[in-house]
Length: 520
Image 1 (cartoon, helix red, strand yellow):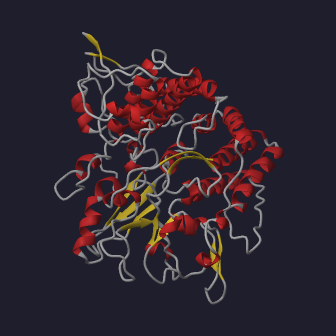
Image 2 (tube, rainbow, N blue to C red):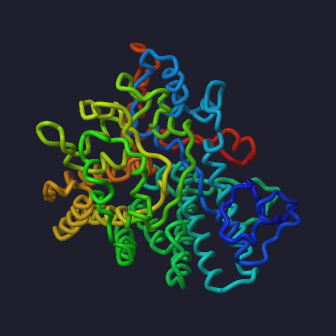
Image 3 (cartoon, rainbow, N blue to C red):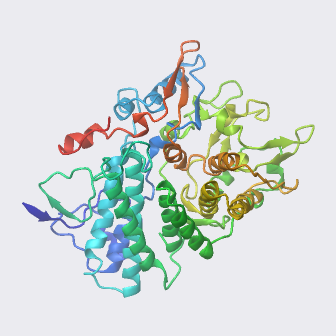
């Protein structure tokens, strides 16, 4: 039997832009709720299609090589925190179940990315089903339809890269490799949806984005950085084509995005001069300013993930029970990542010079943090204005990568120079201007590609890029040292090409849908 359901609202905390849409805030009979105006759908989009106050991929940070386990350090409270993060940190096939066991996280709302992403896809599908049936200005309806298509594409992009093999995985054919089920309407049938292939999911993502680009191309008004827009669509298209190794198309859409938005934020403008000293380092006023539209000029689209203290375990914040000069956060930024940033100062350590990303993209708690090892008290920022989304920096880096890859295959030096120009343009905006930035000039193709990969890692710590980048870089071997009690730790290794680079589908999803198959 086939049935059609109307609007479903899961929470009373929907962000609405029109008070006339409050009827959508309360749970009601599904048979009684039906949108009649575009404003109704705009209100629905804010609560169900957009990821405001939602963590879409909470586990993706702690499973990368950007996170280090500092251990329990003889403190029972620290040991408990270390234990909570063990499942994802050690790439356990039961990582989801481990996190919700007694003694695990009490807030389990944002652990199941599979369910969360499909919930937002369902919201997009409702908008797409009703957009041509409601009253309202055609321009508003066209723009909202474009937003819904772009958001649906974004969610499927995350899903297929979490639960399907990389598009470019060696020895894997994307046309037969299992991806995720494509749910493209709000119709519900008794049939259980099977997994579409990775290639089929990418084809749908591409179709949604190209349609969205047409619909969003000429907006009649400024909808702001918290609404999806055509530049965001071009950014995601360029990212998608990088993953597919379609360099010309990645270059094309990076160019189209930069033709609209090319200004980068100057990190030196984010803080007062005394913030560059080694003292007065913790300033909550600087939270996420790279995603704060009041000071950052490079935001394309932003959303603010929901954050609780517990979430910081999975964001390398460590849920530090007591910030101190004695104990390190149980989980923190890895030395491998931290040492990629150039950090230097005057002889007496009074002035900070160098890559300001190490000061602004991370939160610092504690004391004497200028004494190595630096990662001891550095944590990534969370909360604040935005925190996830698309930035102009990505367009520069996507274009640089496409040119580097083409340079490697063709030897055309003009491509190398173009890539260097984009990388240096980005880096100039990231460095302390009190010491002149020295542009890089790398002639060897392999060295340039490796430098680019490090630069991408420096630019996007804990924004969800690193895990997906590792996958498309050939799934290299990485290791995590895990320790609860001093002297009793062990090293866990994710071997090159390991099946665990494709995350397990949560057991609850398998229980609900008998047609799903688990990843190896």
